[in-house]
Image: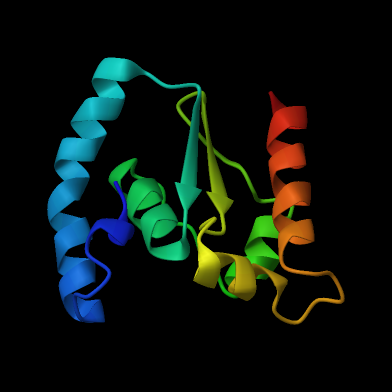
Amino acid sequence: MTDGLCPFLEWRKQQSWLRECEPFFRRLVDIVVPEIIICLGRNVFVSVTRSMGKKVRVGRYNDFIESGENPVQVNGCMIFAEAHCGYFGTINRARGSERNGLEPQIEDWTRIKQAL
C-alpha cells in the first residue's frame, strides 16, 4: 500500500483511496502473516495501523519515527513508521535537524536492522 502510486491526487482523494484499500490490505496481512511492515510515509503508516485495528496518534511524524512508540506492535507484527526514501521524504526527514538529508534515514534503517 502506498500513496506514492497516486502522487497527483488531491489529498482528500488520497485519503479516500487509502481507506478503500484497508480491508484488502488487512486480508493480505492475515494471509501472509508478516513479522515486520515498513511504512514509507505518514499516510501509509496511519492507514496500515488503522487497517490492523490500532489507532495511533502520530503528531509530528519525524518525532514519532524517533520515539519509543516506533515500531507499533500488532498481533506479533512490528509496524515501522519511516520517511519515504524519495526526494521529498528525505528532505522532510532532515527538516529541523542538524543532520544532512540521508543521515536521519540511515539511522532509521539501522534501528530497524537492530530490531530484527
